[in-house]
Length: 280
Image (cartoon, rainbow, N blue to C red):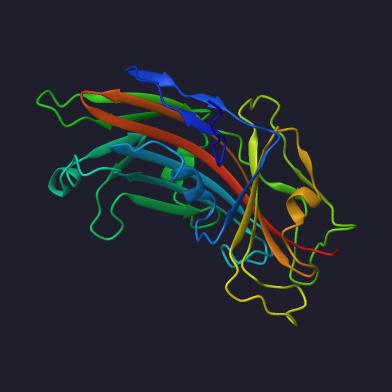
C-alpha cells in the first residue's frame, strides 16, 4: 500500500525493538487540504502512529518577511521538547522523567513542562545550540519499569534548511510570473528522504484591496532534495490572483522503538518559511 508522509515522508512503523523507519515518498502527487487549521508540524504528527513518548528536535529558519519571529532579518529558532501521545504514563510519573539529549538534560518544569526554545543570537542558550551542532544526536529515554531501564537512540541531525529564493522583505514581495515560481533552497545530496513543500493561504492578499474571509487552504507536495522546484499551476491553480501565500519547506529524520511495552518516537526536523504573491 502506498502511504504518504507530510513533512519528510509517511512513516511505516516496524514492530521490532528498535529500527530505522522505512520511509516512502510519492513525488508525483499533490496533497490537498481544505478547511484545516494545522501547520506544517501538525500535518506530520497527524500522519504518524500513536506513541507513548516522543522526543522532538526542531530547527526553524524564519523568513525576513514572514511574521514568524517578527524580525526584519529573520530568525533561526531551535526547540527541544517531549510529548506523550497516550495516557499510559500518569502525570505524576511524567513529572519524574529525565531525558538526556546529547549533553542536555530535559526535565519537567512547572511553567514550560518539557518544552525548551532558544533563538540563535547574543542571548542564545548554548546548552541547546550545542545539541544541534552534533551530526548524530544521542537520546536517552527512561522507561518506567521496575528495573528503570533506559532506551538509547542516536538520530541523525538533518542539515538545517533555508530558502535561497525567494527571500522576502518588507519593501518588496516576490510574485509568480505566468503563474509559476522557481523556489530554491540549500540542497542536501545525502538526504534520500526528500523534502516537503507546503503552500498555505488564509485569504490575505498582496494589495490588501480584496477580502477572502474564512479561507484556510494548504497544498502539499513531496520532492527530491535537489535544491530547486518549479511551483506551477498544479499547485497554484487553487489560489486567486493577488493571493499572499506562505510557503514552507522541510526535511528530517525519525527513529522509533517499542521496548518494555512503551512505544517511543524521536524526530529531528528542520523547516524554513517565506512568502510570495500570486500573479496570474
